Image 1 (cartoon, helix red, strand yellow):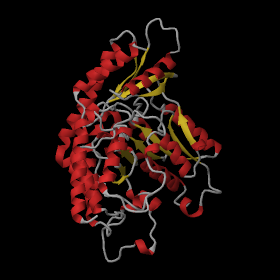
Image 2 (cartoon, rainbow, N blue to C red):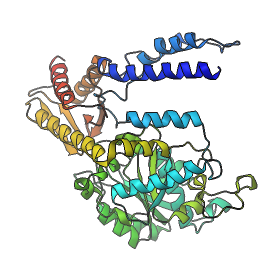
Image 3 (cartoon, one colour):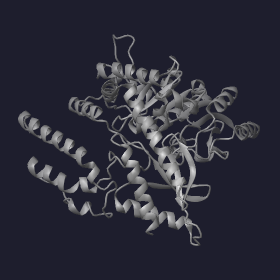
Image 4 (tube, rainbow, N blue to C red):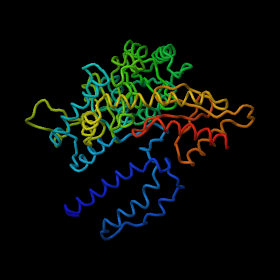
Length: 469
């Protein structure tokens, strides 16, 4: 492909992208295909000879969009959002065109220095203390893994990477029972073992009980274990459960634990001052993660990982073979030393475009709308005699279930059928969870293109399909 052809097909892709966004509202939110259906449309063997772009693009248009669940759809109310604001998409196109590998300052000076600035812009937007520095990891799972590894090395006096874990004291990490599975996986990868992630019981609101955390730490010390770290949750995936950040951080500091705050979804809302009570005391944490690629509008992947003492993170993760050293330059940052990954994408560019194109106030307005519209839907469903709101809204997330008066069947099975019926219908997309031993349905608003009328459609769809079961 020469430059003229590249120009032609780049324009074609841009036009297709704009058309796609314009027609999202007309598409079913979740892919309406069966397992294996898309695979049958793709050739079994790779081509020996080059194929023309007309054929390739036509096959893309014929096969791929209809087999995708549309995460940018205005009525995507499942999981958590994964937004891609138009201005940030343009930045992503430019970053992909440059095709830089941003592992070291010298491999991409502008990418590194822009990342330093963009992390600090986000720090200011969240009103975190100046001492917090950070980097863009790919996802919150990676950020959490970096935090768990730092807990491990700090507790072992920085010997784990060199000598291994054999013969060392068994380390313990503490988190609530409602914590995300990425913490479990981080324990696997860090070699600490899932059994050494101590799940602390929660209170009626889903928050970790500080008194039981203290009891667990005391019992572990008495048994010869070495308490190493604490994971604090803000806006848990299931129903938005949020720990008492201030109380837990204070306890963790007293016990000399490395404290990681997981606010992967809810952290975006902290650009709004009125929601910051949810993580009051966060300045006492050692590590904080939130994902601009969830609710803020940065295309996947972009996870902001803040640390109060960068030296601890670098001491845990930096490795410097001769071929990665930079000589003759002072005061530089190599962000590959802040992450598990060596190779790194140019993630800061989309944050730069995003924050400048919409401004913090524009992004605050979007988040406030989502919170208010979610509250509106919860109130509407609460007013219906055959629905129960099973957890009150936390920001833009709540749960509910269909419970017709006098129904003698299995309500869990009924609500599983309702979720499947809704998603097969295609107008909206929801997912289920377990809460209080019950099968319930989650609702979370967050689409960048969402409007208030989409809440009306959600309410009407839920009621119509539930009562038709």
